[in-house]
Image (cartoon, rainbow, N blue to C red; front, side, top):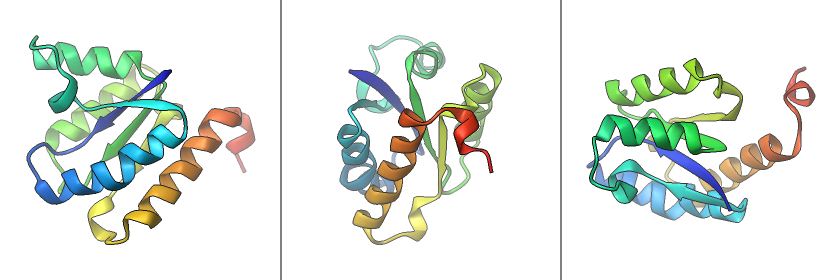
Amino acid sequence: MSQAFIIMQIGNPELDRVCEAAIVPALKACGLDPKRVDKHNKGGLLKSEIIAFIEGSDIIVADLTDERPNCYLEVGYTMGVNKFRNLVLLGTIMFRNFVKIFRKIQEIIFRLLTLSYGDLLL
């Protein structure tokens, strides 16, 4: 199973609910194994584990709600290792409808997994 890494603010109960109710199920529905550093770390250096998750993931989903600096840093690293084509940026806090978030994420990831980058250009 291909891996997906979720970049998001840690410790925000509302965002945790969005992640568990919409982001994780959408990734699983696309055949991806979702990982979050706060849920799946192995007890090593956090920075090293984040780098390993980013480099080892086929899709990276970044929820930039609340504009956390570490999230921007992780997105920047993702782009720096040439994975920007595999990057989905979100601001989910504005949505209250988990089904809407789920469907949008699923649609975006399905397109990323089934189309080449050139097919996405207009």
